Each structure stands twice: as structure tokens, then as C-alpha cells.
Length: 183
Image (cartoon, rainbow, N blue to C red; front, side):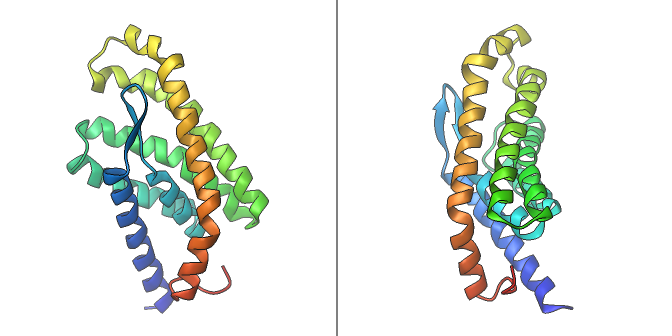
């Protein structure tokens, strides 16, 4: 087996672990009952390293781990986590994969942010009444004053932190020999 494939697998496992820890430990409230965790930053970095499929794989693994450990929302929470994280990280990594430049990273992260906000507004309308146990009319009343600001703040944090951390993380991974020097 190619040693870079083994290192890629090890790096992705490490990113899954870090992302899960971020989701389990680094959570804090932003708007009402909605809590932010920085797992999407790590998932986006994984996608920028290895492409959108890596973001998708990391998202599935971390969301499943969350569902069975720290989340109380079951399969619907799993679904919401997958949709939210993939809409941000897969979009960002898609743009960055096409042209690995700082401007592409910024464009991808901005597009991922916008995509996450729009998609999660729809999914919050659709799924939140089921897993929160509220009538849809109550959720509709929360869309603009709670869900929209939360998703805007969450996406902004994700994009900003990812831009700030990407280069230092790449330098550490290169110096440790976990990724090829040409990345």
C-alpha cells in the first residue's frame, strides 16, 4: 500500500477525532437555545486538504459519533448535522480543489457560508418542528429572530476560523510528514 494513502487515512482519522472533540467539548450558546461548535472548521480543513469527498466522509463519521454520544436529537439531529456541515465544508472544498489559491479558499468559504445559511433555513423549517416537538407555526416565528442570526454567526465563525487556521495546520502537517510537501 502506498505510504501516502496510509498517511492520508491517518490524517483523516485524526481530523475526525479533533472534529468530534470540538463538537463535544467546545460548544457554547449563541442565540437562545442554539449552540455553536467549531467542528465544521476542522471538516473544512480536511476538505481543503483532500477534497469534498473527504469533507463528506469526516462529516458522516463525526455526526454518527455525535448521535450515539453527546446528541439528544437522534437520527434527525444526525441528518441536520450532516446537511449543515456538508453544505459548508463540501462547498468550500469544492471551490478550493479547483484552484488551490488563497482567493479560491476565501471564495469557497464565503460560498459555503451562504450555502449553509440558505440550506439550514429550509431544513430548520422542515425538520426542526419534528425533533424539537414544536408546531411548525412556532418554528416559523423563530426562523428570522433565532435561526437566521445563528446560521449567519455560525457560518461567519466557521469561515473566519478556517482562513485563520488553514496555513498553520498545513505547515504542521507538512513538517510532521503527514501530507506531501507539494500541498
